[in-house]
Image 1 (cartoon, one colour):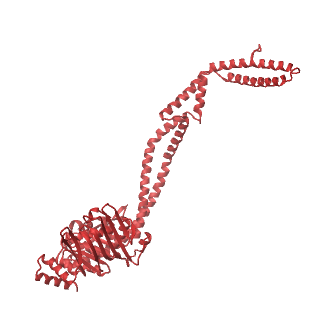
Image 2 (cartoon, rainbow, N blue to C red; image 1 turned 60 degrees about the vertical axis):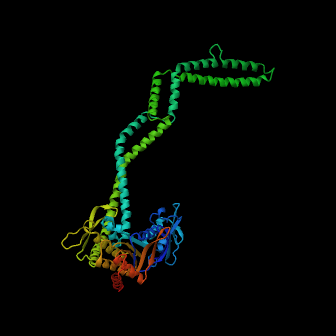
Image 3 (tube, rainbow, N blue to C red; image 1 turned 120 degrees about the vertical axis):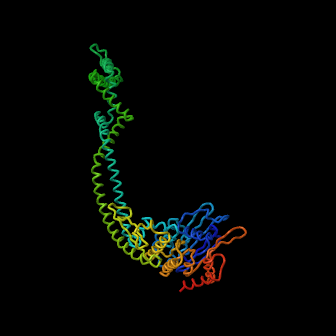
Length: 558
């Protein structure tokens, strides 16, 4: 329940500090006096968007603060979840705006995000403004009314979880099918590319080996001649002119003089070692020479292989055979994925079918609760509308079953309405007058308020389009809501409604030399008489208006 409201430097309000009471209270005042300003300030406490233009001209900061009694609201879990102090059921909510554009929010003096303020506000207070009457024609609002009366929150949450899983699998399957379709178109091209690479029978580091072989084959005669010449120079021929023969002769000469010169023997040994090593070198040169063939056909084959390799490298903008081997592995991976897509599609289809069965089963449970709630709403609404001046009202909650799951269930809800005996039930948004819609909305709010624990409801001119005894009946409905344990505030221009309020507040503007300010005061009995008399007769008070005002108040307070 809203216990007190403090506003400073907001719009036309310099400073305001007002207490509120349980039950049914009314707020009156001339058009433009500041009633909408009051609602705007409360809206900020509910998490609505802040606008620095709302700061009173010439001021640097505005403050809106409200004190709530949370007794019986069941909000302990919210405070625990958000690590906020729960002060014996007392809660102070504050919003501050600065001219620099900063906005700060507090719950029990703890800084919070606006989202947290909005979450708490939705459970503390509901403002029903005139434009909300238009919601009556919207299917999501109508469905929400049914869900509130059905008390199906848990079932709806479970349905939402299952529906989101079904939609996710549906999306995955769609993407897999598209990828498979695209993959089939690409598979032939990928296979063609891979076949070109596979024709090379490419092995790691093969490019360097083949390039070396091509170099050798291209100069085979030159290389072979040089090898034989080198061999001859080292090993010599029949004339003994080779290097090895010369070394052998030198070693023999040194050995012949070793008796006379002992140092000659180790020199001979060293020369013999060189001769042996040089002989091995000569043998190896000879082997290379004998293996080196002039082979034009092999050279042609190697060059053709390299030409094919270079062409593929250029085609794929690659620089080496190592990069080409990586490309081949990637192409095989893509082909494997395409070949495996059918298995993935089959698995996703099976999972999606199971998810669809689950969501449809849960949707049927939800629909059953909604049908039961719809029957209760129809009966209750017809009873509530009779005293509101629509004695022949008929309300029907149409629940059309959807064969495919929707985000909100399997039901498409439409409220059908008829105000007269001889007229057919039709969509309420198309057949109900403004006054009838206002009364239907009031009845729905009364019905909802009896079903949920929302402690405070503010009606902003819900009486638009009605007058006389209908207005009295609407006031009686709001007073009954207040008597039912919740706080109801009604902003009204009708004296019939003002007279039934248990408490009465007046909003007015006051001009000074420098500016205009809005104020709100709680009226005593005399003040109420004068205010209601003004509402009856206008600016000029008459004895008749005062008498009527007293009569209305006496009747309203019985």
